[in-house]
Length: 163
Image (tube, rainbow, N blue to C red; front, side, top):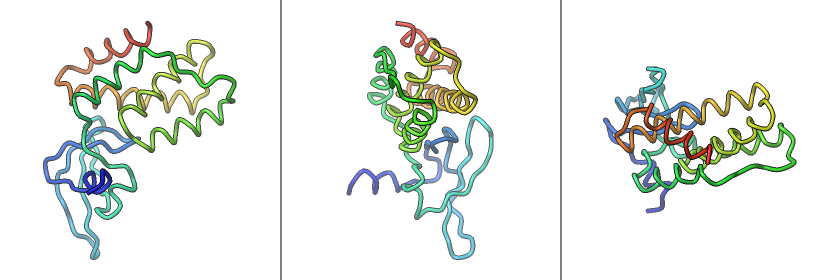
């Protein structure tokens, strides 16, 4: 079984990450019009979403990262990561692709590069929204995985970014 197949298997009660939306919980598996869906409650917005079971991997639904992956993603924030002389539209596309990939490391890379860019020049609105989404996702997932408060996670994130 490859990692995509492993990630496609979810049970009711599993904590999951839905990229660009956040950390959530599988509430149910429902059948509608001969299609099966996962009902996922997104914690940050208290919104329920229905995701087709057969497309779960394709849309990036995945289990929470492991403690090791979370620690690695957070420690990667200490490494200065910028995209150099790439214009904001290209940067946006690259970072959106990383967010769609959805791994915790990819999300940390988005936070890292956009945070550092914002220290040089104010981010355009679309990049600012992407940064805010990435930061929220990184905080929520880290908090869930490491079992510490969101405020503690934010302190860890910004202390690493400021190094």
